[in-house]
Amino acid sequence: MKTLRVAVAMGIASMCAVVASAQVSAPPAPSTAAVVDMIEFCADRRVRRMERFYPRQAIENNIRGEVRLDCAFTADETLHSCQVIEEAPTGHGFGAAALAMACRHARKPSDLGGDAAQVYTPEGGDMVHVRWPVRFTIAG
Image 1 (cartoon, rainbow, N blue to C red):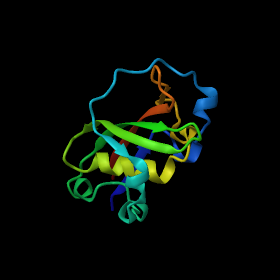
Image 2: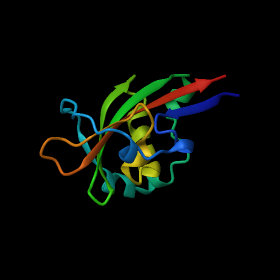
Image 3: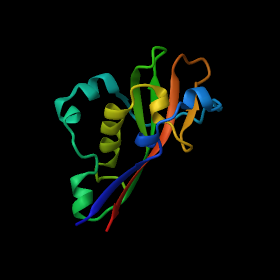
Image 4: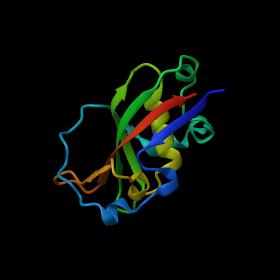
């Protein structure tokens, strides 16, 4: 039996107050990736009911993946939008799975914490952004 792991840098079991404890860094270069309206995306029943976050095709083919998301939060800490700014390998559903994870676990910026997360506010922007990696691995 395979053991599936989704190693999220936010460490769901050890969520920490990133915004309170981390220094806000300079904004990274803008991404040209599509922006996903998370209010609309997360309202989809298929996403809300998603029990597994590891893409089935990747499980069947023993494929590991990594995604980097950039998520924006409004002043009242509502998840507003996300971009899949990196996905490797592409074509296996890792980006969509990472977005579904954000729906389930990102209730405020500090939920996407951990040492690997980058918190920033774009110049002239009014939303806090968090860039965070999601790693998908299969052990066993």
